[in-house]
Every structure is written in C-alpha cells, then in structure tokens.
Length: 76
Image 1: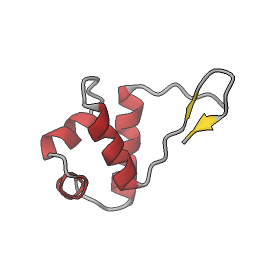
Image 2: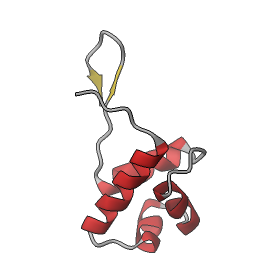
Image 3: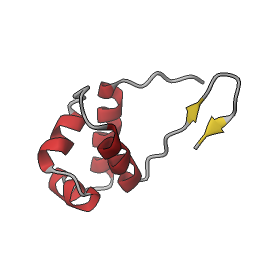
Image 4: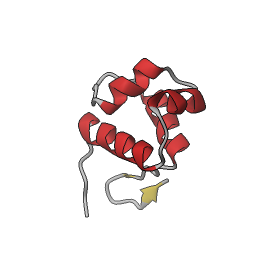
C-alpha cells in the first residue's frame, strides 16, 4: 500500500502518537531537543518545519519512516 504523506498527515501522526503515549507537547520538546513552538507547528502541519528536527521527533516517538526509491527496496 502506497501512502502519500503530507505535512498535515505527519502532524496528525505525531499528535496521535504523542497523546497515546500520554506525553505533553512540552515533554516531547524537551525529550527530542526541540522547542515547544516547533512541536506545536509540526502537529499543525506546518510545511516549513526543518526536516532534521522532524526526523528527530519521529525517532523520539518511535515512529519508523521508510523511503523507497523507484525500482529498489525500502531504505530504512
């Protein structure tokens, strides 16, 4: 199944995962080394969030990201 991620769907995934883990936005910001404003903007789907910080937050929450190049297997 092919999923096309958007800033909004990634933000929703981050928010839903964080809430299921019963973690506050402030605690996620502290744990991931980002700022509270960044977490808020990421969860709102802001399209200009820094990729490196987004990847750090995903890793902090245990969210796995798989990229697949055309004709190749997944790159984890």
